[in-house]
Image (cartoon, rainbow, N blue to C red; front, side):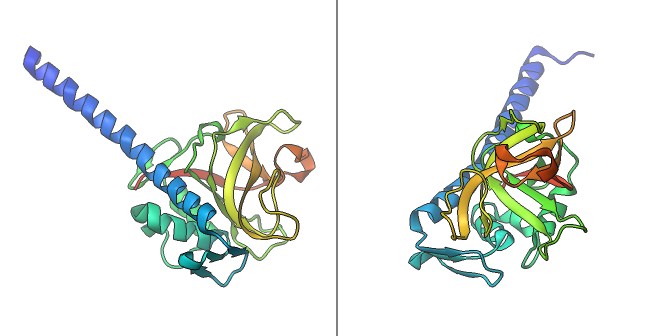
Length: 224
């Protein structure tokens, strides 16, 4: 039996409302992320890359590493997504929280972005440090702050403008020579034929093929 016309209209309205609610929610979390990042931009007076966290927003002090920064920002903007990354997280913990979600799907307060080209401002990008890479860090985590653009250099991929905390600047970085801590710069995500990230070039468009660090990379959109 076919639904009566009134029932069909009601079902259509409910479907449209659900879609509108989902779309609004997908924008709300990233927008709050960007608001907190803008607050840091406006208030910072003293920022350094340190593994011992010290944050005093009233005095403009932001001394943290990438994961402490991500945890602090998400705790204020998207607390439910932050709770999926327990304790004092490391970069790899953000990676695992996002990697639990299938590409292109949603689980709880996260939507996992399928391709680098689909990243949007407010998204989280995180990766695992390869075992051979000479670093004591577990990986890296950052926030996307602008829509990606296709790389025109020899490496197939997307250029991402990001906000992070680091001691090594990216391309077109806001951190002047010798400065560390919070800032913005451009990163290159190398991608496969389907657009999924498979490595990164720390220095954006000037990254040469032999500069690309292959590793597991995820992009997540924190919804709430």
